[in-house]
Image 1 (cartoon, one colour):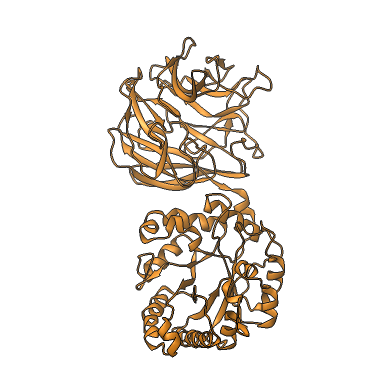
Image 2 (cartoon, helix red, strand yellow):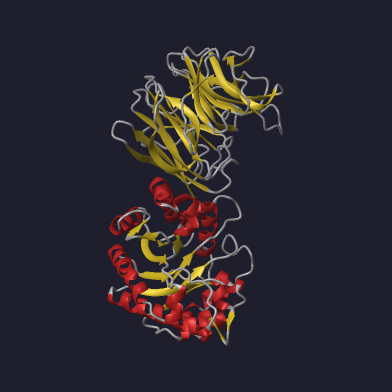
Length: 579
């Protein structure tokens, strides 16, 4: 009798973090998707059985089946001595057999993948590929031929191979430079769909079943497109697309921001169906329903993101400027970026995109709505309108103040709590400092009338000596607390030779917002005393803080922001809220 799998099943090595899996169904007729089952462990690569009764997935090295409506638990399938299945498994068109990829249980200590076949109802698998690594992705409609991705001595790259399902001589079908992967048959048996990196970017391709007429079918310009799966009726192809900023063209790893896309089987512009956190295991094999109306896939959440303590924590969107730093990039990428920030645990944002009455090219209310849709509050905003040399010299900044009228009105319409000057250039004299401080005070009075708190964001040059003072000391001394607060960037303070805590003690209550930043990810450099900073937050007057990253230790800024969020969420000295 089949066994119900325990929820403590260990994750495969390709998911390095403790993971929560969400088995989902996408309906292409209604363009909706829903979670049918949640698992506190890794579940991967659903197949839909030809009779429509089951989804087959792999988990913990075994294959399991589950009802497509989620009404059953995972039911372990009998795969004999095979206990190290990976996420490459295929059901024959008649539903009688299943092929899988796994390490060979007879080769103890060997971790090479081979292709096996066995009856769907269970039994001892038969190994058909004598050589490895071999990763199964397709079986012909007549059940006679398996197609798979394999590494062989003839090429350092993986190519597509074919072999009779009863075993025999394998035939190499592709030989282009770079990786070819994910081959599967169309239901008429005429074509094999696969993905190839031969153009420098992973794209979906199609060839005849004998390997002839290899034709590129997707032309995504900023995505790497993997694992094209053709629907049983031969009309639609769904595939997973990785953002090129996150991954090399020849990689398809776990725990990334990905999209599921669809094109007509004849080719054409892709339609983005859903954006999700996933990657490896999401849709490695064909998962179309028999009626071609739905397909199954798996999305993921990292358990530590879910389990870490929840805290009010804002993030400066400038950190993700490579993804959403212009109106064009924001329009293209903001949905998945904002969603991931919320999943990491950020609850609000500070913008750095105000221009001409808009934020990232959107009207104020529309911008706030996009943040709220992702589960984020619009807490703070950065902008600058600096004084000219003549205004500094004369002390007359009447014209400059007029610029702020539209700016403040836009921020009021957006419902923002804080508005801060993001930068002023180094000043040369104490007189210039007093003039600029008066300018800040005047802006603050305007913001007060609009119900917005106004502040000044410091970098490192504000701590350099100017006569007998510094820019920051001069600004604080010559502005009224009710008009101007100060948003100290604690990393830049340290880089400027200052102690944040000493400034808190020197000017208690003036630092209502802090920028929490490090050289790269928060807490990694050891340069900034975050525990002392948070322990003295009351003295500073801190009510909110904003995480900002100029750079990450890797090119993936979202990974860095995730690690920074987890560091703060798990730090015992950071409170849930400072309101």
